[in-house]
Amino acid sequence: QLQLVESGGGLVPPGESLRLSCTYPGFSLQYYAIAWFRQAPGREREGVSCISSSGIHTNYADSVKGRFSISRDNAKSTVYLQMNSLKPEDTAVYYCAADSKVDWAHMSQSDYDYWGQGTQVTVSS
Image (cartoon, rainbow, N blue to C red; front, side, top):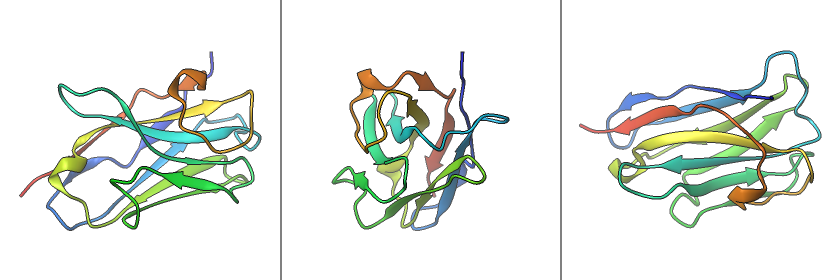
């Protein structure tokens, strides 16, 4: 079972930045669509951003457009989520997921078959 590894979470004050990373050591993710999801306490998990296997196509939730940026380095088999101008409402556990069946960008959770264990992001003064 492929399990992705997220890193980069932490506690930051509002307005600061974090960069999350998603990788699977020893395995290439270059042909898979990748997405980031998040789940805040008491709320359902929601899509944040996604990227196609080529990295050309991306999409974002309205709540993070203009603040977050997704990218990938297929040579390193790593996908990044750059989060700028963080707000308290961005506080959540962030998960990355891989879809082995398609290579286009999408945020349909049920179609993602490989997931990480999540990394906590807390935005608070």
